[in-house]
Image (tube, rainbow, N blue to C red; front, side, top):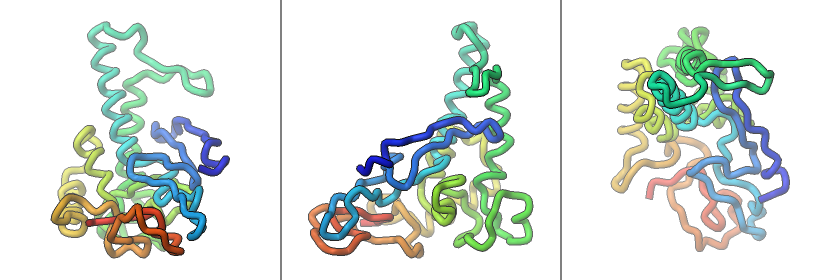
Length: 219
């Protein structure tokens, strides 16, 4: 990893309640691999850095805060709040409400372009509609709008975040586009960055695939 990959700013954005972190030089989540090919020039460059607020992390955060609320109500936690970086007390319930309120606005990509004004959308970057963004406010805006399977993790751990009709349509699209014979593709096959095969033994000059660095694979 490059030195820049270790220089992380991980924080809660209290406008949304989401946890942000990572950068383009860091393998920030489970689905990444650090480039290691000097021949291809990808050494120190992650295939899928996923900087920003990853959707499955937001879902896991919501479920954690919800659990903290339950423990607090049972008297199993000493406090029912956290103190944020500004020195303000934020109750678990207020944090939970903030995530709930911001989620669909931040992550949903509406089916119809005329509804974009109701969400945080850059219409010029949208590739597919009726999906949930993989990231929110990533280093590279394009990566926000890539169709990946991570939203399904958030659905499992925090289903209350999702509008039912939106969720059903997004699942149907993932089933049609991402599901393969042995599992889920890690990226939309129609994405410009998609590469179908993971071969760690590949010693080529291809920046996108050498030493197993891929942005998405199905097989």
